[in-house]
Amino acid sequence: MTFDTLVLERDGAIAAITINRPKVLNALNAQTLDELRRAVLDLQRDAAIRVVILTGAGEKSFVAGADINELAVQTPTGGREHALTGQHVFDLIENLGKPVIAAVNGYALGGGCELAMACTLRIAADTAKLGQPEISLGLMPGYAGTQRLPRLVGKGKAMEMMLTGAPIGADEALRIGLVNRVVPAAEVMTEARNLAAQLAASAPVAMRYIINAVNKGMEMPFAEACQYEATLFGLVASTDDMREGTKAFLEKRKATFTGR
Ligand code: CO8
Image 1 (cartoon, rainbow, N blue to C red):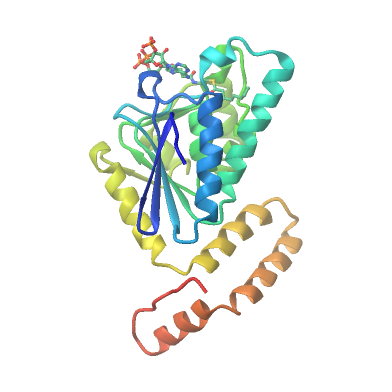
Image 2: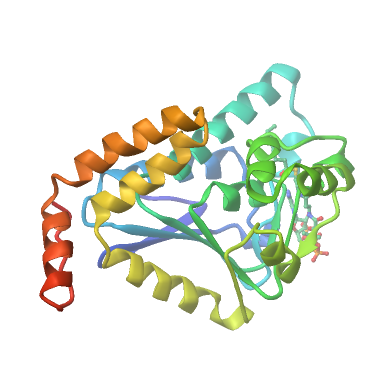
């Protein structure tokens, strides 16, 4: 599988996708979105891959948004289709069934912030700037930012960020829960790889069900979501990894998970 606008690397159980359009600060055009869709589906099918890292090429930017050259000439129907396409790709990332870690190495603006939010976890460089500046272009978020941002940081802060369009720094993003960790810029990939290695050693079926229970459960009434959780718990109780994890604890040794 070849790509023009991103780089896909595999290293054991960890894959890394790098959005690779540094001349435009890794802005997402239609081709990038499509390549991202293909890369993500490929990684979903690859049982050897347990964790994915997503980052941007260069030192300045994760993703500086949707490509404004394309937005400037969009039509109403085209704009709707474009938004739906982006939402579909980001849904695939959110529901990949394996953790996706965003290594936010710089600007995560507009579609870039929305992409980071679709990831399971976010590690930000201390130099990162995150925000939804669409309003300053006479636009609004269209890759589900109006939905994921309030779910992550609460309605009030999300409204403020989207209505003012003002980006926030990494420390503020950490404070409001938009990112999980902040590290010095030079260490963002190391931190992401260390976290990925830790997660890759965990039980993958349990991890898949946790991600699924959180994502699907947040869309359900509480009691229904608890029923759903219990069903997944029943399924996880059928795995070799559950037997190994509990046995290893009782035998005071480290568990070795096989993914079965
Ligand atoms: N699209 C296209 N080109 C871009 C983008 C972008 N989003 N961001 C930066 N670039 C280009 C610049 O035009 C510039 O190109 P050139 O060298 O040819 O002039 C190059 O990247 C470098 O950028 P700057 O010179 O501007 O770099 P600075 O360090 O001065 O500034 C900023 C960096 C602050 C990040 C600045 O580039 C900026 O404000 N970028 C735009 C950020 C933005 O508004 N993003 C949101 C876009 S809208 C969006 O994402 C909507 C998503 C939902 C779409 C739904 C479907 C319809």
